[in-house]
Length: 265
Image (cartoon, rainbow, N blue to C red; front, side, top):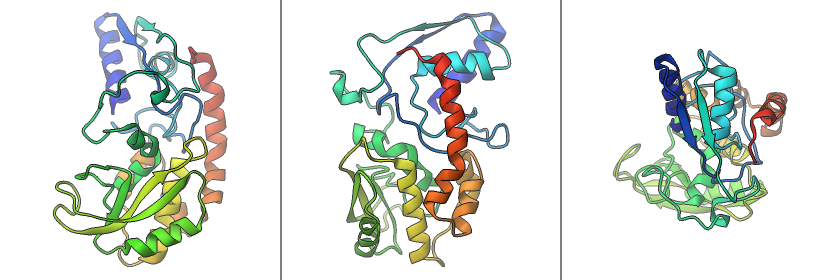
């Protein structure tokens, strides 16, 4: 939503003949890795995903502004990007020496940001994504989930860079407010190996297998977050995660080529 707001502000500035300045800043979870399907535009364009970029795009806001201005805005703005000093693409935020400034009540730590690109998709289901707890997006579950069994099944997958701990929590707002939810906490053990989008697809596939009569997609929102309906449809058809990721990879490769012209670091 922040980069969509930036895009709307850029468009308004262009229409008003006003210059637009972006003070660039680091990508908290490095500027190299990319994940997820590229949004199908304009079918799935919304405030949570405006332009055809993937869930994890590995670009600074300044770099995105350059791309938006050149490729996607109806009218280009007089854009100035002030680069960040001392940052390179491989850095995670805790390697910059800068203090973590909470960008949202539901983004309290770098751990949250690390899991967010993929696990945010749980919002598009009838599971809690941990909003209303002190560990949003790391915690996930529902009143009908056995946390021990789910953790055992997920850990048996041996997903790279992550382990799952059984957890019980009662959100004080959002889904299942005041109800006891069973589920898991995702603990990232190797952030370089961890892939949040692949992880959330495995989570959803496993929960659907365990609770076929209880689990529900909120299809409209899930598809907007993913930028496509094809991921949900593939999960519903029983496709395995490797197959799903293989289907979205060509779009991700094309985006990687497109973004090169706009990188500043």
